[in-house]
Image 1: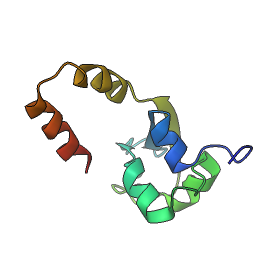
Image 2: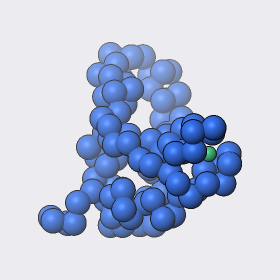
Image 3: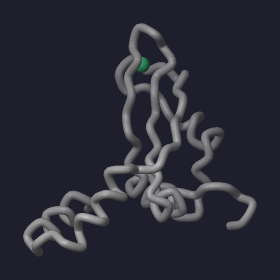
Length: 100
Ligand SMILES: [Zn+2]
Protein backbone atom coordinates (compact mmCIF):
# COMPACT_ATOMS: atom_id res chain seq x y z
CA UNK A 1 0.00 0.00 0.00
CA UNK A 2 2.92 2.34 0.63
CA UNK A 3 3.53 4.71 -2.24
CA UNK A 4 0.19 4.01 -3.81
CA UNK A 5 -1.53 6.89 -2.10
CA UNK A 6 -5.03 6.78 -0.69
CA UNK A 7 -7.26 3.78 -1.08
CA UNK A 8 -10.93 3.78 -0.20
CA UNK A 9 -10.10 1.84 2.93
CA UNK A 10 -7.35 4.22 4.03
CA UNK A 11 -9.67 7.17 3.48
CA UNK A 12 -12.26 5.52 5.71
CA UNK A 13 -9.64 4.58 8.30
CA UNK A 14 -8.23 8.09 8.20
CA UNK A 15 -11.69 9.58 8.78
CA UNK A 16 -11.47 11.44 5.52
CA UNK A 17 -14.38 12.80 3.61
CA UNK A 18 -14.35 13.20 -0.15
CA UNK A 19 -16.67 15.69 -1.74
CA UNK A 20 -17.25 15.97 -5.46
CA UNK A 21 -18.19 19.28 -6.99
CA UNK A 22 -19.40 20.19 -10.43
CA UNK A 23 -17.21 22.66 -12.32
CA UNK A 24 -20.10 23.95 -14.39
CA UNK A 25 -20.73 27.39 -12.94
CA UNK A 26 -24.45 27.32 -13.65
CA UNK A 27 -24.77 24.00 -11.84
CA UNK A 28 -22.42 24.02 -8.87
CA UNK A 29 -23.72 20.69 -7.60
CA UNK A 30 -21.74 19.17 -4.75
CA UNK A 31 -22.00 15.76 -3.20
CA UNK A 32 -20.19 13.89 -0.48
CA UNK A 33 -19.03 10.52 -1.75
CA UNK A 34 -20.09 7.38 0.08
CA UNK A 35 -16.64 5.89 0.60
CA UNK A 36 -17.93 2.67 2.09
CA UNK A 37 -20.14 2.08 -0.89
CA UNK A 38 -17.29 2.85 -3.30
CA UNK A 39 -14.97 0.54 -1.38
CA UNK A 40 -17.50 -2.28 -1.66
CA UNK A 41 -17.80 -1.61 -5.36
CA UNK A 42 -14.16 -1.17 -6.33
CA UNK A 43 -12.44 -3.06 -3.51
CA UNK A 44 -10.56 -1.92 -0.43
CA UNK A 45 -7.26 -1.86 -2.33
CA UNK A 46 -8.55 0.34 -5.12
CA UNK A 47 -6.77 3.65 -5.20
CA UNK A 48 -8.93 6.64 -4.48
CA UNK A 49 -6.78 9.51 -5.65
CA UNK A 50 -8.36 12.38 -7.52
CA UNK A 51 -7.01 11.21 -10.89
CA UNK A 52 -8.39 7.73 -10.25
CA UNK A 53 -11.84 8.91 -9.32
CA UNK A 54 -12.39 11.82 -11.66
CA UNK A 55 -12.81 9.77 -14.86
CA UNK A 56 -15.47 7.72 -13.09
CA UNK A 57 -17.46 10.63 -11.84
CA UNK A 58 -20.19 12.55 -13.55
CA UNK A 59 -22.42 15.27 -12.19
CA UNK A 60 -25.73 13.65 -11.40
CA UNK A 61 -27.50 16.94 -11.93
CA UNK A 62 -26.22 18.27 -15.26
CA UNK A 63 -24.35 15.13 -16.47
CA UNK A 64 -21.10 17.08 -16.89
CA UNK A 65 -17.89 15.09 -16.61
CA UNK A 66 -16.07 18.19 -15.40
CA UNK A 67 -16.10 17.19 -11.75
CA UNK A 68 -13.53 18.11 -9.11
CA UNK A 69 -12.81 16.54 -5.75
CA UNK A 70 -12.06 17.86 -2.28
CA UNK A 71 -10.36 15.66 0.31
CA UNK A 72 -10.89 16.81 3.89
CA UNK A 73 -10.96 15.31 7.38
CA UNK A 74 -14.49 14.23 8.21
CA UNK A 75 -15.14 16.33 11.29
CA UNK A 76 -18.60 14.86 11.85
CA UNK A 77 -17.15 11.36 12.04
CA UNK A 78 -14.35 12.41 14.36
CA UNK A 79 -16.68 14.18 16.79
CA UNK A 80 -19.15 11.31 16.47
CA UNK A 81 -16.52 8.92 17.72
CA UNK A 82 -15.91 11.03 20.78
CA UNK A 83 -19.60 11.29 21.50
CA UNK A 84 -20.10 7.58 21.11
CA UNK A 85 -17.95 6.83 24.11
CA UNK A 86 -20.43 8.57 26.35
CA UNK A 87 -23.71 8.13 24.54
CA UNK A 88 -26.32 5.63 25.71
CA UNK A 89 -26.65 2.33 23.81
CA UNK A 90 -29.79 3.54 22.07
CA UNK A 91 -27.88 6.28 20.27
CA UNK A 92 -25.05 3.94 19.46
CA UNK A 93 -27.36 1.54 17.69
CA UNK A 94 -28.87 4.37 15.72
CA UNK A 95 -25.41 5.48 14.65
CA UNK A 96 -24.50 2.01 13.45
CA UNK A 97 -27.71 1.73 11.49
CA UNK A 98 -26.88 4.96 9.71
CA UNK A 99 -23.54 3.59 8.64
CA UNK A 100 -24.77 0.45 6.99
ZN1 LIG B 1 -23.42 19.78 -12.68
